[in-house]
Length: 240
Image (cartoon, rainbow, N blue to C red; front, side, top):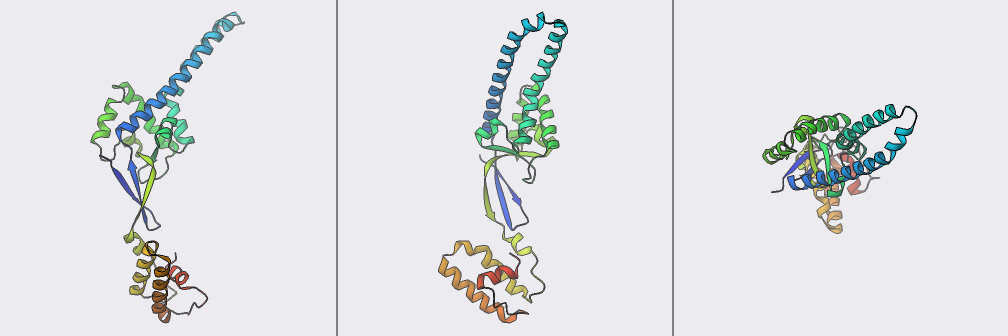
């Protein structure tokens, strides 16, 4: 069953994010894992060719030891730094998430920051160690927002890149009107409702309705605003 989360903004709209399901998240991890393995294989082949050269070089044993240490560091960065680097660089997406159309965002729909990415991916180490994401799968299944343990720790969710804008009339009507125009509260509500629904009207009906509302409110205003067209006036009166 698809799950979604609604996020209110200050611009009188609600953004609905479709939460990423367990299957798509697992496939994204597999894509990233395959890419990581390919990089490790390439580095392993390069190290195999370089080892004889390092052994024959002056201080060869020391160089080989440093190369082995660097290899282990590279493995850590490839398998865990990979997620942190890409999520910061690509705004919440790794190559796997990008291929599957997924993105990590903070609770509330805000872009992920470095701190949240580091936390969620440090917890990933524990998740991998304890049954290779078994706990993560269980957590995502029982969580209302499909969160794995790292998401709970970092305050993040994984969503599909496509979003849906839905009407948020309560937020729209709650915004203050311009205090200096003389627009009354009933007229303000009338104007707000027109502006909230005008996109659903055809051109001629929208123009006629704007003219009727403007004709009703103009005599009540502190100024005539004759230089403003009807719909422009209505937008001006409520600060749109």
